[in-house]
Length: 108
Image (cartoon, rainbow, N blue to C red):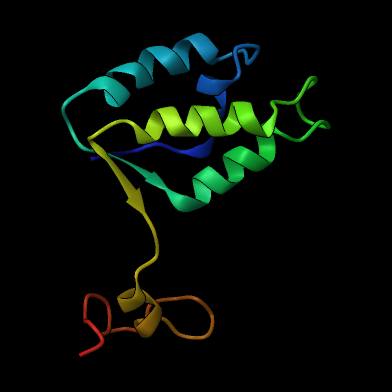
């Protein structure tokens, strides 16, 4: 499974990005293909924050444009959203690391 990162999302969305064409050539087969692919929730948050920030892009994308791009991604039936699971939260120590011997165990 391919997981798409924030930079690729930004480059694919922003037509004025230097790597827009390359990002679209790489991602179009993923977005439109029959294989499973994934988006980590933190990447979506970062994407929205970056493309709508006026200090980074001039003009910045509107929220409507950014959410429109995300909605188009969500239309892919092969998309899987990645999030931190409750089982992982249970086995992580206070520093955010996985406690040895706990990884993969559920809460039961």
